[in-house]
Image (cartoon, rainbow, N blue to C red; front, side, top):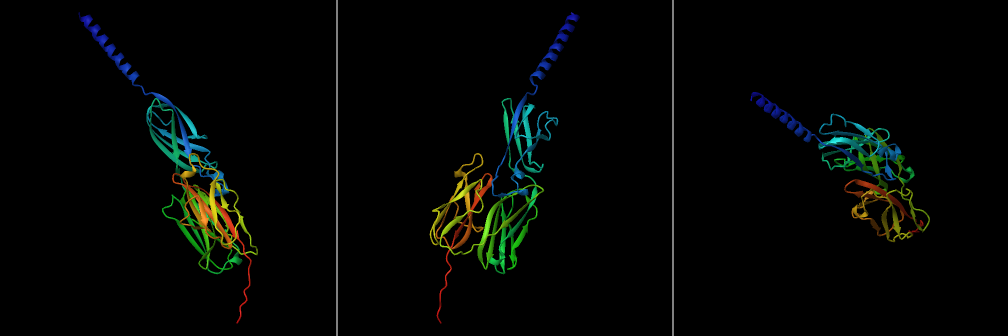
Length: 347
């Protein structure tokens, strides 16, 4: 009887061990292969001002990824990849945190993003939007012009605006009649894309200006040299359109009708060529400028000029999307010439 009791107790202990082992086996964390896709904003257009005067400075070519979660054990820390997608193998099911940073060819960090998610047995793909610009840089702009066309007391106004600035960056330089150049240099500003507006005023009248997009990246100075073209009167009666900026990738400005004389109406229309993925024409907003001065009522793809006046004016349009900020710009110079005349007076 005693042996029987011992046998039963031994059998119970064995069954308990097997049951516990079975439960532990059933509770083992499931692993899963997951593909991570990285998406960056792409505001690359021909007329942007880039660091080193190269669009390559804002193109990501590699990424650093760090993932933390169940049983991560540092296996997924600072993983460097050269594609915008990467497959993590044998990731434990559960809550994970991902961080990613994009770098250009010079290994300068451009943007970053993060993602908190739960990986389940059915999770195949995750996506991170790298929409936070990283670091800070500076900007230097030199403007040149024909000094013979200005007078003493002329001023050049510099304005840099964008979502990463708490307020617009404004600078003004007063120049004398012999000066034909001025340089503006900013302090450190957050990395990102900005709208640059420059106007030149003489005796209270705007005589020249332009608008461009400026890219700032971490630890770099973006530099540009621009010519301020001052409107002049010539000796011809014809009306002509002079586009000296080249065709920007983002689109062109068309004129209707193509030829008119002084005092006639003209309509300018922005026609996009290339838009970022997922963006349609209906998503865009517009801001028009004349010689660098914003035209408050001009907020559609077309801007009408009621009367063309003799002289030369540069018109810029800045095209934006609320989700990704400014995405491009285009410009055109409108010139109407007139014949100078002499009016005799009598005493």
